[in-house]
Image 1 (tube, rainbow, N blue to C red):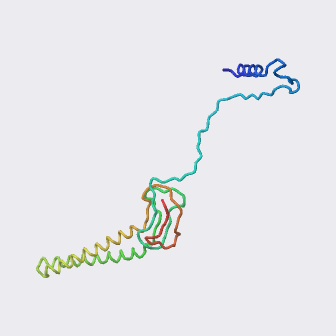
Image 2 (cartoon, rainbow, N blue to C red; image 1 turned 120 degrees about the vertical axis):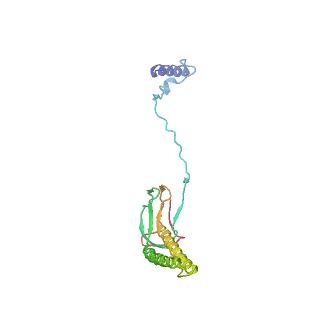
Image 3 (cartoon, helix red, strand yellow; image 1 turned 135 degrees about the vertical axis):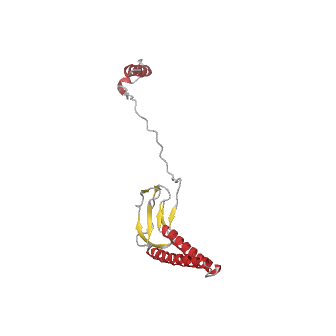
Length: 186
């Protein structure tokens, strides 16, 4: 329907409601004309929003902690930023572990040489089986120590286990962390 006929209909309804005889409106001249307010309607978008207070829970969330103790040598994230899976978050100083790894590397080399010499002596019946077995066990023990140090070195680099938003940083570069120290939330 067009707005002009609608206004005419509204005006006619108002006139009939007011009446024209003097019995129903005894002081018509004293009040003056009746005021009518008119608004033209236009189509517009309706905003359908709800404001509420609440808390969001992440699908996955962890507290980032170190598995070993040491000094923080590098921080690889910014507070409130996003990180990707595998990104380095923290590096712990590993100089002492590197030195121990070099030392066990020498022990492995020495045990390998000793085991090789004793194997040759065993082949010509120059030593007992027990002496060779002791050398072989010493070699395996040195290799196990070396593997243990490599695993500890791997723990000096803390990486993001999944992509996400990082929380507040609880440590600073140069600070000491232990396995109980909270580094951040992810």
